[in-house]
Image (cartoon, rainbow, N blue to C red; front, side, top):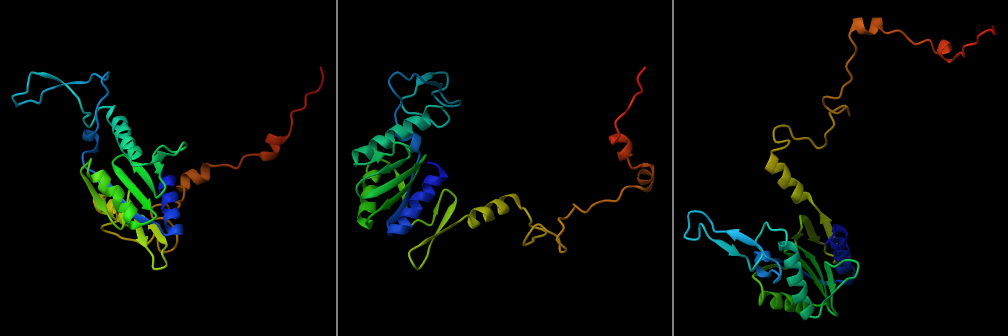
Length: 219
């Protein structure tokens, strides 16, 4: 799903006070099957009794190009059995009479009219796949979802930014509230004067002479 779709569903959930929940499918690609006409072969892992043999895959492994498509086909089929239909303009957005679901690979965002309808979706999915659920939703795809007292949702990525800074140790030694120096000039961007010899050698161009058209007397 696109980021716009995720924000749209969260906005609808806040507007109509829908029950939110998120789920993550463990080893999602391994829960689907390759098509009968898709022939994918792999060699046995080294240092095992399978080394030296060639095997045909029945399920897509992580790293083969068919894996994402096969998983999407599998999860879409399962959700259709639960009464969901895909949006014609956004296949990763599915809807039923009681819930909306956003798919992003192995992550699902569910917005249902009641908590019971939301939990029913999770129960049905848990009977087919190993999933972990998050109720209420506090984070989805790097977006922190903060539930406000008035029922609204505040979306921000402060936690995601803090993780990036911690991972790369950026600004660890010299933290600043903003990248500007005390006097409003970015550090390292102060203009440097030209050397005296270069400044003396530079002559202003003769603009008048350059703009005056050349006139030649007839022969």
